[in-house]
Image (cartoon, rainbow, N blue to C red):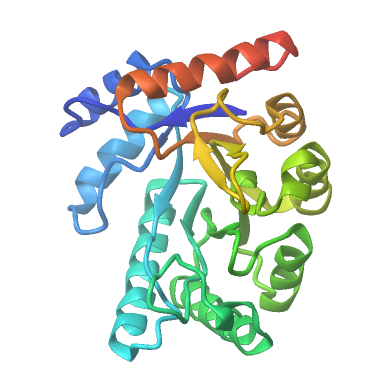
Length: 277
């Protein structure tokens, strides 16, 4: 597997970007360009990444293609198509988004999101995005979430089978589906289940951690890797069974120092278990 994360400092040329990635000792990176940049600029970054042995892990398509507002929904679908095309052009492992929400907050909880009708709308929407682009070397991937599909290995499997597109992939964020004390205390088993059922489709993963508070009722908070209860030994061991270019990407931290601390923790766990990052 390859560890990566955001870069800090100037990245307005391929050379500067590669220097920032290497300064943090990453072997993977987030996409450094936008879909609106000229084709020769995108190609220059792809060439630089390949020459430096840096894998571009993912292109974000963060938007709400399930919105009840039709303009918002159609604009999001168009954005997802543009981002998937960018991922295919630059050779990223995947273009990632959540499925979206029928509620007022694009990534928030809504009772409608876990219904058969919304499941069917997800299927229709993802097929529309993939069929419009027809990627040949990248994938459209849905990130796991706590309160919308896919919220478990089984619901993700059901989506994969129902959408039935070879360019649909899995983006695994186990922290996002540790949504109860039961899952928190048994997250090692949950992680193993995810890889057992979804392993062949996993293109990229997120590296976070989660802590269970002791104040009623139930409080689960995202924290820096190493400060929570996620079983990183199991997580990295399962990841190491996948193809060597599978990416593990740090996210949601505030400073470069925090990212360095998180990377150190993950590297230490990996080293202690004979795993190459």
